[in-house]
Amino acid sequence: MSYEKITVAEARKETSVGKSVLLHGWVRTRRDSKAGFSFIELNDGTSFGSIQIIAPKELTNYESEVKSITAGCSIAVKGTVKESPGKGQATEVEANEVELLGTADAAAYPLQKKGHSLEFLRSLAHLRVRTNTFGAVARVRNTVSFSIHQFFQENGFFYVHTPIITASDCEGAGQMFHVTTLDADNLPKNENGKVDYTKDFFGKPASLTVSGQLNVETYAHGLSKVYTFGPTFRAENSNTARHAAEFWMVEPEIAFCELQDNMVWAEKFIKRIIRDVLRDCAEEMEFFQKQNDAALIETLRHVLTSDFVRCSYTEAVDILIKSGRKFDYRVQWGVDLQSEHERYLTEEHFKSPVILYNYPKEIKAFYMKLNGDGKTVRAMDVLVPKVGEIIGGSEREWNLDLLEQRMKELELSPEDYWWYLDLRRYGSVPHSGFGLGLERMLMFVTGVANIRDVLPFPRTPGSCDF
Ligand code: 4AD
Ligand code: MG
Image (cartoon, rainbow, N blue to C red):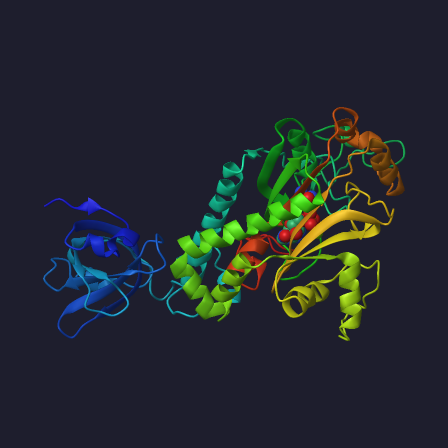
């Protein structure tokens, strides 16, 4: 007899009924029936749902092996797909052979019981992908990543690989991890007693990138529409549920584009990702809705069909002051908005995603285009319910004199950014872009509350395991 090797996802489809199949996976549960056979719930990660295997006692290894199968064991099953009489599943598999591939000692395997806390599962980052929650997060993360590429590819953007190691601080915030091969216990010093970086690997200080923007801007000045998508590193010592030291950011950069069009791109982009997740991860989304937020899918559908509110920073500050709310941080024009303010605006005041724009120049990065008022820059942040800031972007300053002047005000040395300034010397154009934090987007679509649970192996202050 020949068996077709298929996945659990395929075996669960009604169209597989009647097929002789070979399945592989990890056992979620096994129980004996009184009638003398075993029910095995098998999952291989290809779909949220598992498949039920019925192993009859006539199997030659039934007493010796099948009955010893416990949660976490890996097995191979040959059998026939049948229509299932049980509720909530279209099919099941009647086994002709069950082979035990890898055992999982029941006394030691930590994922025996269902319903472990997310905190506990963080200490098992190497095994947690075998749970419902983390399998679902992994599949949604995959769908979102693919959707990001599809969106940009379909819209004429080129994918650019920007460097991970850099000598420039894009955000000018000094939150960078240093990259060095110097011996920390025996640092070479120069005549001023400072570390002599000319002896270091690159001959000067280097860091992990906080953003690919400066590099991707150069490619926008030659390919017109580009995006970079990769790991990003920030040594901000903020132990919050929304900050990670290593996260993934997607950054489009668009030549011949001003702030208003940048907002249009950001809105279309977010809607596209939501559409794809609702369409391609239906089982996962139903699960997240049950587990995290009873209004999850409805909220996302609403986001899909409504326009994002546009609101200037100045208007937003007015709204916050007039709200009569007692915030932990008091609001006045000029302060950076905190998560509590962002969430008030998007969750309570507008009840929709909001694009805030025209921020005071003092609280934004050096490269943003100065408005005619001399006080605000053409920045934009996209805020969504529960998460707050999900996108940060701007129109870029493309006037050489204004950019150099701003850098001097911020005590950044134009010589260090000579190549970036060359873009303003040779064929300068209006251009804009933004950065979407992949993990923030995942938190938004799944309702998962902590960034540590949407990253496969989170890196946060004091924590770099696995
Ligand atoms: O607002 P940010 O700092 O903007 C930039 O880095 C620009 N260079 C982007 C650009 O215009 N090309 O970061 C962009 C987004 C934030 O809105 C947030 O979603 C995410 O990156 N982000 C983080 N996500 C997780 N952990 C952190 N520590 C993050 N810092 C920023
Ligand atoms: Mg930001």
